[in-house]
Image (cartoon, rainbow, N blue to C red; front, side):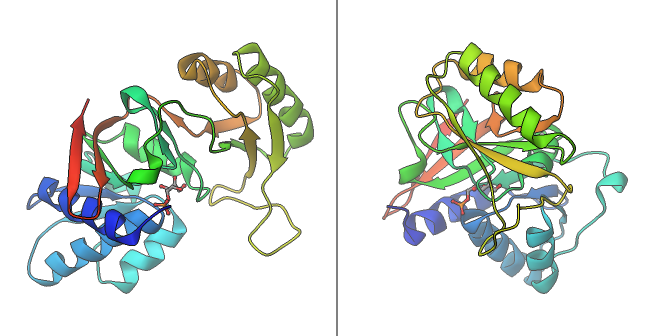
Length: 233
Ligand SMILES: O=C(CO)[C@H](O)[C@H](O)COP(=O)(O)O
């Protein structure tokens, strides 16, 4: 069960990585929200940083809290990004995209000197795949792309994957991401070889990005009821 105390404790521990003058990538989701609120408090107390958001949702939150945002096009360096995750497997391999922000999250994580992942203890898993893997696809040809994604999953060793098109919350309409695309939620059960699955998915025309984050998280902070523990990769 996800716990707000654990999320808060992970977010508080991530604040130790923040330094004056940094450009900081702000993640998306309920755990990242705690970090963003803590950062806003420090900014109100005089901390000088600039931030870049990973989603429209985070942009709106950051603006409402008075956090200075700069357009990505004007950023030449991102020192630190703090973001949540849906699953954290061995080696710091992540599944992300539960909040449909995986494309911008991956672009910003990949452009950052240091990605810190914050999560409650329910996110740490012995092997990944129980959480449906989000795959962002172009609206053009998405039904055919879904079939090719299924084939790519099978070819990469996933047994009997099931693909679901994500609907907008509370709607029968398909979800449209901040980038104007759709999301395929791929129920895999287990992803035996994440690097192979990532490579096979990236080879499917129509796939814009997938939610496997490999080699991006340098620090993972898992909150518990009393504090947090930090894993470095
Ligand atoms: O990848 C994400 C959004 O696209 C989030 O980081 C992920 O879904 C975790 O969210 P939460 O902290 O609410 O559990």
